[in-house]
Length: 304
Image (cartoon, rainbow, N blue to C red; front, side, top):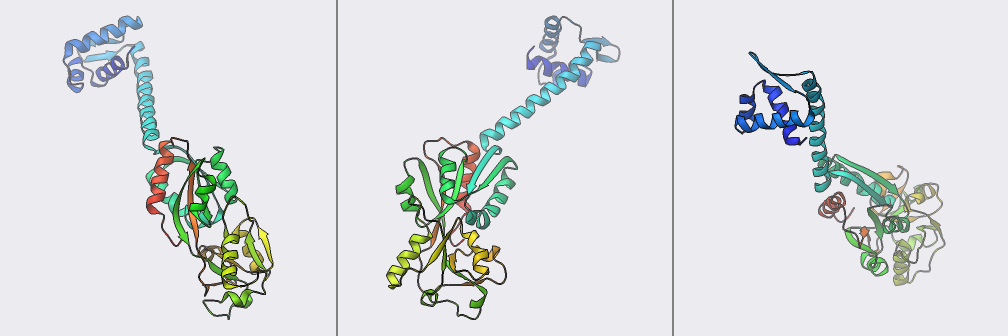
């Protein structure tokens, strides 16, 4: 049985007439009658009867009508599914992101993406930046979004296996305990030399905030302060709120910080963090991934 024959049969049953079905199918009646006759011979059963009131399906024809309608609906759905996979509007997308990206850019980006591709199944993993790189490199994630002290340096370190592009710059602000409420804005880094600092864990293959701040302290001739390390910047927020130290963070901190936390611009210039989009270099990405990357590069902007 050919799908063409099945469509012809269903058209005849729906119209109750070979002539009307032929018109609907944009063909002449003789080849339609021959196609139905060949279908009956192939199946070994009579499917249609002709009478004064038109053409009606036999008992076998009624069963074929039910089965055939479902088969064609399934085939149409399969076509829609495959076209969706081809254009990136269906499929699966796994994203690994550091919490800064999760809070600052992922919500708006996913809202835009899902409005354009609502049938894509999205998996979001929140991880330390180095783990994000590993997730992408080892195919546990299709795309990664991380902050870094420099995209160019990140390419030097990981460019052989990963394709890395910049999605924005993030200025760094001072994040201070409640007792700094009366201090000026911007705040002078010289006023923070006696404080304990809270910095993300240093990783030799991931330029980060520790390197940025050490460069600033060197330029200002300030000694390195005592500091404690945390897994991510967000981990530092409750410690700062409790008066256990100070830190610098991107402006997203205003979205997640408790009201008692003090956020100030810094008097001295501090190089910004840069956001990086990461994908596997050797891959020909699925269309779903291509669609997401294209959207991300078109909508993500500086100063996030």
